[in-house]
Image (cartoon, rainbow, N blue to C red; front, side, top):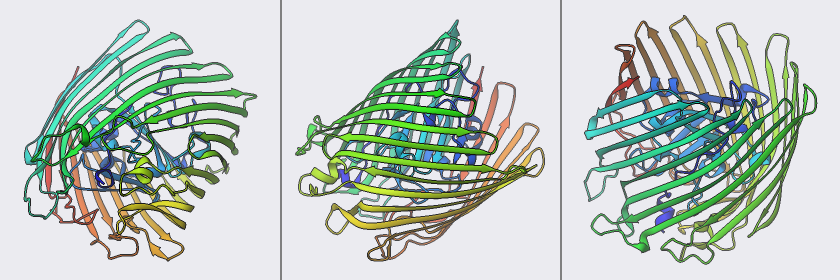
Length: 592
């Protein structure tokens, strides 16, 4: 039952698909060393964007993008659900340096546990990529790339409301063709009372993180990479006093990879092992072995592309992943799962037409064989306008909690299947661009949690329709704006009831202004209230106003300030869990 309330924490290994010196831009989220066909559904959040925003969590950073929102059970490390075009965590593939991460029990990737200070950039593909990645890549792919910039040392510190504090030190060194890097961090907060219950306490967190590695440029077109990542700590979540209100986490991973980029042939090979451990318990008791939820994940990937001509390419690949939860204190009926996949694709790319065709075959040890397909077409006009259409199929198998959690599992669950259509129109002009995105996702046997029975069930048919209009404008050299309007209609087609926790409407305005050594980012955000349960009463709508300011005091020293929820609005993204009120965080960065 604990895992139905709290998603386990996970950090995983990094792999070869990180940025290398083989190309000026390596788009790792596509598993291929070039961009997706259309820029309309691909975005990059780089280190400059992260430092400009001064945010304290990755979900907050991602939710500033058009078509993305999140819900959270309290504080910044607590259980978080990110949505891309209305599709949630369990239907989004999350990678760290190109390697898939996620819990075998909850089925989600708790990337809220990764500090923004450890991240160099984030690459996001919005839309189904099931034919390339297999299970779970229904809503998109998020690739988090850790910091490994050569030749820099940085020390940063922060202090804020509720005794929030943060210290980070990172360094890297280039020794010939070898780049070595190391990053260590500690942060924590006393927090605030995330629930209006009898406890009336502060719910804070404490976190220690370290990541390091090495990359070697064997030749001008070959690279090998080794990465290690570990994060451990504790957070309080006021979940359910019967089962627990504290969570300890200890996650570590190791991965290695090889990349080759020739004139016509590109090849990526990687393997990784990650361990996810979390303990959920009452704060009045010590954690025990029975409180442990443990996942060990082994992965291996081989992908290649052969450029037949300047315009035509063939893509082939295979991957394997196994999940083992045998170390968990809970006695599951089954404790292992594995899936192997084969992929074949074709890509045509020129100045006018982009065409991508892909087919995938997966074999799961519990559910047998699956086939996934994707097609995508992009047309570019003489004026630079682009129109993109795509269709894809995907699948998702039930988690160990869905099937086997004692007393609450449902072993009769079937895998869910989906078909997703998308349409994008982008009109660029000299100082900006206007973009219209539409997506329809239809699910058969969608797996959803039923709070009335405390177990998961299959819904015969559901649909999630989304429309997003965005406008990016460069007004002057120092002034720019990003505006977006989003609509989501997520419902059970059999009952015509809206699905819970997904806001049906959102508006965002991000204004950036830079002058001399000063830069500011103002954020105005509105969300219409989401249903507390499927078809149930809605939460209150809310608006937020946030501000980030940075000042370059010298060549080496920078000051930053983040002000969140300036109007001190009381609101909830999950029923019964209070969101943070007005808060502030002061940062300093020394780089040399």
